[in-house]
Every structure is written in C-alpha cells, then in structure tokens.
Image 1 (cartoon, one colour):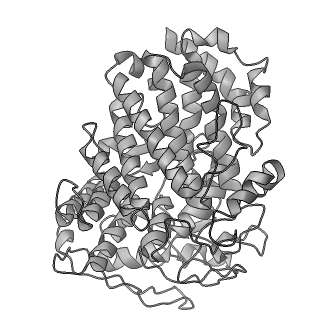
Image 2 (cartoon, one colour):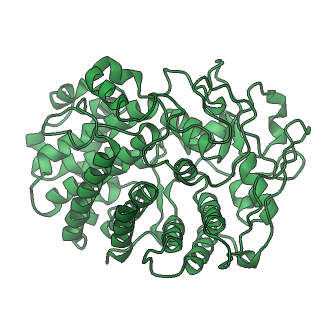
Image 3 (cartoon, helix red, strand yellow):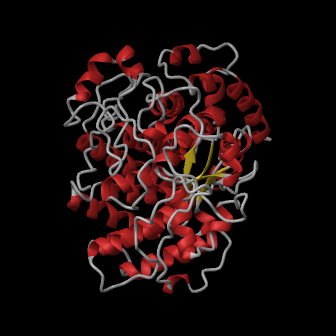
Length: 525
C-alpha cells in the first residue's frame, strides 16, 4: 500500500538531513539537503506525493514544539513564563535568566533560529514540488503556506518585524524584513489564499488517506484544518485592535462568517501528538524539575474554586494548590515539593489552539461592536462551558460566580502577596468595557493552559490578565515589573548572516532593539 511506502520514505527523511536542517539556525543546509545521497530525489518522489506528504509532517511540529529541547528553550522559558502558566525555578548555571527579565544574549534568538528553519526548510521544497499544481499535490502547498503563517506569527510575536513577503523563489529566508503593517497585510493575503486552496480539496477522500498517518494534529481531516485556518485569522485580527481597528474588524468578521467554521468544540481543538521523547511539559517540569505551576494560575483558580484546577495542577506537599511566584532567582531545591507541579503525563498531547479560544476571541470582538454571531455575554459563557467540557469537568454554578482571585500564600510566607485583580467569572452587562475585557481575557488565559503564547500577546496588547510582579527584576533594558517583557532582541545569528537586513529592521521598531520596546500592535498598555 502507498502509506507503507510513504512511511519508509519518511523514515529516511526524518533520519536524514531534513530534521537536522529544521533544528538549526543556519540557512546553508538547503542545497545540502537537496543533494543528500540518503534522501530520495524529488524526481523519485514527485509522482506519488511521498515528498510533500513527509515534508508536511516536518512542518506541523512548529505549531507545538514537541521536541523536548525546543520546548524547553522556547515554550518553557518564554511562552509558559511570560504567559504566567508556569514559573521556572532553575537558573541553568547563569545569572542571566528569562524569568528575571535578563535572558542571555545567546538564548534570545532561539525562537527565530529554531522556528524559521523548521518551517522554511520543508516549505521551500514543497513549494518547488507542488506550487501551482492541481488536486492533492497542489493542496500540500496551501497547507504548507498555512503552517508557515502560523509559525511566522509566533516568531513575529517575539521580535516584531521578520522576513516574510520578500522571501521569493530562492531557498533562503536571509532577505529584507517586513515592517509590521506590511507583514500583517502579507500574512492575511497568504492566509486567504491558503484557505481558498484548502477549500478546493477539503472533501477529497484521497487527502485523508494520504496524509492521515503524517498529520500529528488532525490525521488528514482538512475540515478541521480549515477551522484552524479561520481561527488563526481571528487570532491575527485581534492583534490589530489598537493600531488598525477597521482591518481587525474586517478580518475577524471574515473569519467568523466563513462557512468553513472555527475551532469551537473539543473535537476540533488542535492538540499535537508529536512528542518524540514524551510530553515535553512533563519532561521539563516534572522529570527535569525545571518549574512549577505559576502562582498567578493558583491565585485566580483557588479564588474561583475553579474545577479545572485539579486537571491543571497537582497538589503540593501540604495538600493544597500552591503556585510558585515568577522571577524567583535563588531557589532552594528542597522547597520544590511545597509547590504544585503541572498535572501532565508523558503521553499527553501538546496544546496549540484550545477549543475555547475562538469563543473568547469572538466575545472580545462582540464587546468591541463587531458582528461575531452573538452577544459578548453569550459568547463568553459559551467559551467557559466549552473549556470545562474540553477539560472533562462540570461547569456547575461557575457562570454565576462572583468569587474573586485569592491572595497568594506561600508555604514559608516569604513570597506572600495580595491578589492583584478583583475580577469575577460572572459576566456583568452593566460593567464598563475594560472590566468585561479583563473578564474575557482572564478566562481565555485559563482556557489556554498550559500554552502561554496567546496570553503573553494578550497581556501586551490589553494589560490583562493582571499578574503578580516578578520577585526579581534584573532587566538592564528598562523592562518594568508592571509591564513585563515586551519582546526579544533580534537574534545574533541574523547579525552574522543577514546583517544589513536585520539592521534595517531595527529602525522599524520605533525604539531600541531590546526587551522594553513595544511591538507595533502593543500600543495600549
């Protein structure tokens, strides 16, 4: 059968230079891959789609970094930390530390150096094999384009301007950067093309047969990928509410009204089974002992008596849910059992987009007066019930709860701190805009656990959720404890290989190339 042949090809490719090229920060490996004697040639594979099938499988992990070291350096240290999902307790032998706002220069490029090759090494090959073709072969190009937009958004969320629209027919992304308005226009344009291309093949039964074994998220179900694409469009639209409100409204309403739908149910949520060494959150936080659940999570969820907390966290030594404050520098390892570890096992999948995210995004849109298919209250409450269902707990009377976040009580009282928010779960239609916006963003954060990337973005553009200040702020860039890390400096690798273009990108920032400069869309808070 074809799938058996594809698996043999995939074994060669995954064991050869493609994965090497996808996990380094160097762009010199593209030609080497094309001439690797261990890999099948494009001519050998083009006819039966083996090349594009396996290349798609190499792009999908960019949506959720399942390889444990990639997860550690990017999701654990950046997304989980700045999204206040977990708190790091390891210094990794250095005085420079993400959690205290002074990460090492050699680490700040990890997001770029890992993700850009991971998406572009296979994307270039898929484009060369499949762009402009019809049927399932052409589908792979549109699918790959969707995946590169998803990955590019994550990279841009870290740095701001990135290379995108200038990446042309060559096999290199060392090109001129887009300023952020240009970048978003280009990503929306390409995303619309990808959505249209996927729609052309969405009911093609051959697609699911061919891609099922290589799709770590939806097993070749293109209807679900179409929902992910529309949800990504909605996600991107909300980035722009403070700088391009008309465009934000247009794109959000397009996403919501698209017949392909959005991710709205637990069955449609994007969870990745690419966990080659076991679940990476389990590996970093439990097996390696690098962190614990953030005190921000336990403050809100203890106060709310939130039924999801038992699914998110283990109890600490005292039998309670005790989170760890972010930014503790000198941590005594003997104290670790006094804090709650994440509730995650080695076989758990990794979250990319939750079932509830689109509901809360729509609730925010409705709050802003956009046409989102319901009122802000209706969409917000559906988001909560969907999240509870996704996590396998009962909503009970949560929608009517007027409970507020709890004070954080540390096991030894050194890091005790009063709650920083008085927001409750119950929606109040008489409340002002900011109060209900905070309410929506808080629940969006809780629904996305443990994926902190969207929360870091929401925090920078809205100021919500309100988080405890880090215990130790060692920033030398002027990062304040109130506003937190705003971005990461451009990677050193780009100054080594793409110097003129990255220096031009520095001028696009509107401020210094450091961690305190706001991204273009983060203009409110």
